[in-house]
Image (tube, rainbow, N blue to C red; front, side, top):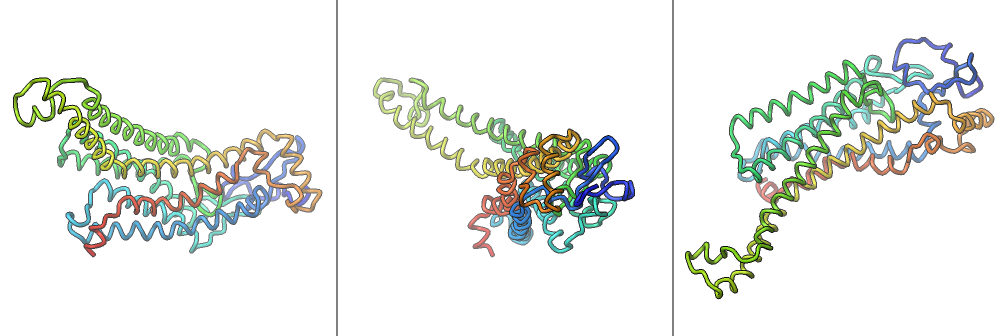
Length: 379
């Protein structure tokens, strides 16, 4: 194979994540692979640096989550406003951010050999960071769904909190993330696909992990939207209903007449508007929490789409990719004249570059939504 490409025949067929090699058939008899790590060839220098900087945003998010957890542990409930649904989200957010912080300290060698990325079986940092990412992300999705479902039951159906519901929520919130972690590790596996945190491999990843994560996030958002529209429908119905029993009549007693109806409309509309504002005021934190998790889901989707398109393009052996590879060979491995391969394989570097730090700030945004003045004065 011409430099910088390497022949897979010169390397063992075991060790690391062999399907993660970036290889293509030059001729029916010749297959060549890009050296590992492939990021420095496939993407622009600014793209790789942006991913590295994005990892550091997880540190303040991790600190914010620890502060919330310690506050709920130390301060009394009337001051800390602790609730098990909020605690569950924060615990798994802490695990999620740790999966990005660990590589900052371990500085893992993401390559098993010159063409093969490492996986959970060949690198301890990969096993730990990838396992925590799978567990943390799925846990956040599950607990957010439980939070949205509880708000819906409480507001729309006036369901009271019981020990049975509390224990059921704890069981589901702990068992489901562990179950999907086992599926990811046992069936899909994890490896270095993009940057220094391991993610689930392409094989069955949508069925065993990412598809469920997306479903939980979308379902939580849908339930939250239904809850808000239900509240608006109930309270605005009084706002637009002509005539009927007045607010003053229901309060004072029995008078029915034109004068009562005339003075009823403005107060009734004011009461309806106050109720709508009260509902929105009580729900805006949960609505924004759904948005935050949706942004995180977009981040994971971007990672999977990017890695999937890379593998699919090499298998298709596209003409554009061949031209890029030829340019790389003619320039002695210097990618500068050839440009980034990301547009060829359909990856929007700017979108990934923007999403990465936002994902790192998920914990900080959650902290802003959950912090109360009573917590600070309580300390």
